[in-house]
Length: 402
Ligand code: MTE
Ligand code: MO
Image (cartoon, rainbow, N blue to C red; front, side):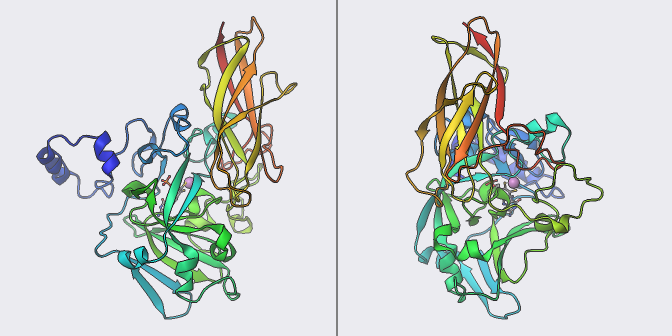
């Protein structure tokens, strides 16, 4: 929030206050925070925005105020004085309530992790054939340090650990709700939550700053390696349960649908919810259609690569001739953690050759992770009507200047 103030000088405070007072009281979004103007806005209410890809990869840790925002509902106003986190076990009356000070007393941990939306790079899928969902480019992803307490330490307080066999899921409930009081709630497998190497955090800091309102003030869940949707913001309640969460967000959304599924007939209850994410990469600089200067027969391209489930990126390959010859990228920044606890993205640069006389060139990128998983070559065989999990080779066309 401090960061926002430096970017948006409030100027005359009384003017701001009076504007606030005039805000439409019937608009549940009237009290949403201000956002950085570089974000490309997909929807205002709820707010969904992403930074330009070229700016995104300038830093290994994405600055908080340009980190993509994906909200389903209005941003709740949470008062630290009255904030309480409820921790419960299904069908057991004992409820543990922790206030913010109680949480601060638990051991403090920092994890470096990338967060990515299941809809990242959906806009490319949308070009192949129309899909349903926000038209994200390649920047609904960001990397940050997250500081807070470990979920395993909180679960220990209610006697839940890796010996717990009667329950299989952990539900996380957000404090955001719409006018009909629908709230955002989803779940992850208990096995991930109780695994000390799973590094699941209840984070109160992002890149060393208190988590801003858009990113989940005062506490959000960080489930490293797992789809953005399970990283619940404005955490209000944790429930240990036998079954997966039955909410709309767990059962009707964020499920990988098969390519030829007919949306009117599909039985979503038969499909698995998205948890661990697959390997992905994107070329962020230059951008598609940009004019690029050729130097000694080469152009320079830069981007990110990342894989879910804590798998480290071991290589990024690029081609400028449709795959006849591949060139290996150099890693600019990669954390020295081993799989399966490698949670942050890898930033890379490659110099790739172009032929004299070429006016345009298509550049493709693919990453390989520590399980030797790679990316599918085309969107065609992974296209799905929700536009989820587009991890096909990233392809851009650029105009060359010799
Ligand atoms: N948590 C709550 N309470 N409400 C939400 O709308 N959106 C989810 C997740 N957690 C969401 C939420 C989705 S789909 C994503 S991709 C991430 O938060 C985005 O986190 P960010 O906005 O901090 O980038
Ligand atoms: Mo998301």
